[in-house]
Length: 266
Image (cartoon, rainbow, N blue to C red; front, side):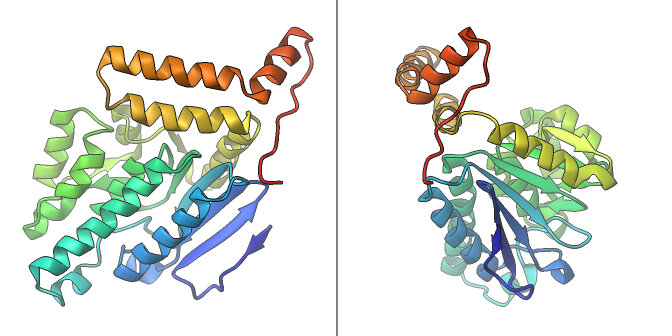
């Protein structure tokens, strides 16, 4: 295990047994996605994407809130159309980089996740929240419709519920977010980290190759017509079947023994 940053860094990274934890570290600013924070996230996501030894990523945060979205003070200090376009493109690239990572990404959510912070949760493959967490796309309350967060939100929850959140700015609690599909799990506040650790352990116990095949396939097929999706998924599954892990896993199942997976990058 190593941690390459100091406690003063706005984004902390910890590596342990193939799992990387990225922690937003601007607790006094509710971990807003400033230009600097977006740049740090992009740098780490690019490095993770190129590292075959990484098998799972957790995105968490310090303080009372998970993420309050964009830094509004920073945005008001730069009233320029091209600046705003570049900022939202930079944020959109971070969100798409999470989806494009070859390994699962889990959001570990405590406190509030609002606007682009809610978008960050929606962009992760899995999201486990404390029971006291809350979620909103509340830009509408300050005259700004959360258009880019709407892209991720509407791919997680039904459109009428998503639009209601977007046009009203109202908060939903963790249990509602779980019921609607924004979250994959909810835990008591004191048990949140343990619940995330359990999910990481489940993923690390599976074939690294199979998980990578599956993450890529899952997101690609969702954008396809049904027939195309089945053609694509069949091709991926055939390639997966020829991997050493699939042979080992099936042989182990038939022999009633525990499989030994390949460990890439080590």
